[in-house]
Length: 66
Image (cartoon, rainbow, N blue to C red):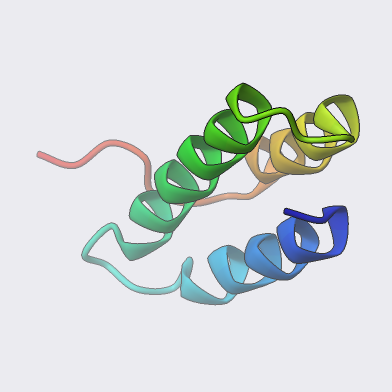
């Protein structure tokens, strides 16, 4: 996994933010899981991947559904 891949995924999450069914949150969860898996599998750039993924926390998306 590359940092540029992570940044592209965040752009997709932001684009999905207007959806009302929680799609953006689902994509964010998937991204976090993949970053964790890459780190556990010996990614050469775990800190950079984590730093890039954390930027999604600044997005205004619906994270709580009822």
